[in-house]
Length: 433
Image (cartoon, rainbow, N blue to C red):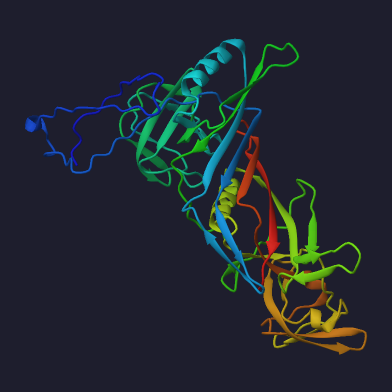
């Protein structure tokens, strides 16, 4: 389609009094002076650059990804159905403002409560060393650690009084191309992707202690959500990711083991129990501490790939569950370990053998036998390399798990000033392997 005209003006329709606001726009086009031929108006597309919430959070920011999954359990297994094509993104920003900035923010809140606004995604922003000038239609940035979209929006931000919004027409690994010149000059600005969102809970204001600073917080629900593609780079076992980082100690780590059952108690006799599943529910929490934009982006892509509760992955216990008592040769399928339980408790379980040099082997135990005070475990395949007892870092069980929550929250310790740090904690539950 030929480019006909471009206007950087603004349309202020005010705050609607009716449930919906209908605007009729009439375009009068003349094709007599079009160099690229007549435009194709068969399916025109209008892109709106809504008013931006321009206050940068320096004291608190988080982002919750909400999926919707239906879990259909049976006695022996479960089926999981994802009901949303992409998770809903919910940034929450808290800003500290002086009285003058607060007056502007309150005016914004009264006009824009429950309406569409542009929200910069600050944790994906990039601080430039150089300048951006008004005629620039291309900005050189690293787009590999952020959600930069063709047809999406960005903000060039110097401060809450000096910023510009633009539409992205092309994305390369080292640059973005804009629909039109940025229209203003900036010195060492931050460039960040922008999402369209609504402040669905309004704006919350907190004044305390008689200070001259005022806190304003809001949660925005993004409307232009997409599911991120990408590979987090985890090793695969039976076509599923194997999580290779031990749980970060960013919160208390808890585990629960319980048998799902119905209990019938008449109050004066024995309590009757009817099992609902033939396996025990094993729940635990995993947590991550990610430092740097690339690490945060990798974790974000991985969380998207889980599709909430739907997609399973392998979780090592990161505990020395089994203690090797004799070296393993390259062709061995039988290994000798210190006794750790009943023989029946080994069979069918999956294990990870991780060496101190980072080499990992994933196998299944298919048989077990007594060997004096030790046990001999038969693996489904040999390791293909000799392993000495002193080389082993972990000889741990693998659990096949999934998220036990459809909401995952990234909490950002720093946003834009200094290295980016994010923490998140997610409950998981074991599923039949």
